[in-house]
Image (cartoon, rainbow, N blue to C red):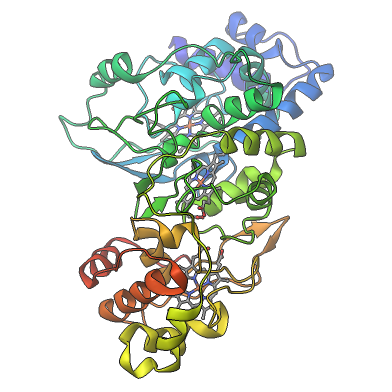
Length: 438
Ligand code: HEC
Ligand code: HEC
Ligand code: HEC
């Protein structure tokens, strides 16, 4: 009864913002109207920008769904769960949340009614968000988002795995409470970058390898595994440390800014789950913020190299097999299916057509991203509202597992790339578990 009344109060407050008193719960009304004054429009706007930095839409807006109404399925080790409705609808969304309750959900993973959220919601990263930014985010979700009535879907996880109380123990072990604090001896840009990367940007939730309990094995640069690259849903989220082959060691600050703003640069282009990060989040970063992120990432020391010297381009070895492709199964596939876009020299036409020579994704030990992108292609990068004019086609229907293994082994050996070969079994596995980009 109490919740219904509270809900009613909040609904009235949203629907009739100019009628200050309602018959229902006065506390809810006060909490909701506290951030309402028109003067706080700038707070709402700042919150909208922060929601973009946090990429809330990537998970809380389902494809073809209403903004922030939830319903996106997400796979977890225990089973499938669904993101929730975070519009200010009082019954089905978070309209009844006070700012303190919102802060608790965001930073500690505890919902209003006290149940623990699965860490598929990246609260271990959002824990770093400071109070000012939580306030602005709250103002945006209460006053800048249209309420949508859409009930949440129960997780498809069977008893006993669906019990949420063990998450309390998980949080005790792995959640680091307390907002980000500037590191002394580092300049403002570095600290801003660290705050964004570790906090709202939650880059580590994909790029940091996970431990036995699926926790990120480091939440900041004090742990060497931080952002050193990790497998994820059929992709490999690249090494973002200073490693000079599979990492960002050969990228300049400007290369990095260009990638985050446009999804491509002279070294590589975005695909897989990075596409939605660029579409919904990083392309909208202010110039200062994207520069801060680049400054911070470029300060990370090299982790995870295999001892090989930095890559240098060399077309010679590859040219021999390309001149006589009959002798090399991989070269045969490459000349027939790939060369007209990626070039005999493997350099493509960056940034439009990605280079394969020296590309960190090609040089990485884990070949999942290469296999996945060759099977399924790309096609969903949208910059400033314009879809990418040159997507990579998928070859799942054209090439069998052995042909894809051959061509990728050829690419990984070619142009001095020096990366290990790819096996047909690996391709078969990803063919089963992944699907076309479009
Ligand atoms: C990587 C995916 C992901 C991102 C990004 C994400 N969330 Fe979530 N969020 C979830 C999932 C999944 C749940 C539900 C978890 C559960 O049911 O245990 C959730 C739950 C919530 C809840 C609890 C709502 C309720 O009552 O059920 C709030 C509040 C929330 N998210 C806010 C945000 C905000 C604000 C942002 C952006 C700053 C954000 N989320 C970004 C996945 C995400
Ligand atoms: C949802 C998962 C996910 C999140 C969150 C994410 N990334 Fe990525 N990222 C990936 C994947 C997968 C790749 C590999 C595919 C590619 O190169 O585009 C990647 C690639 C990259 C690359 C290109 C590296 C290379 O060597 O080609 C950069 C740079 C990058 N991410 C930066 C970031 C930053 C900065 C953040 C946080 C603001 C971030 N990512 C958040 C999944 C993610
Ligand atoms: C029609 C042109 C075209 C053809 C043909 C083509 N590609 Fe691509 N490829 C692209 C484009 C464009 C991208 C960048 C895609 C993006 O970011 O959306 C790309 C990206 C890639 C990447 C990811 C590189 C990175 O990190 O950015 C790999 C690996 C790749 N292609 C391999 C292949 C292989 C192997 C073949 C042949 C079987 C092939 N491509 C055929 C256009 C093509």
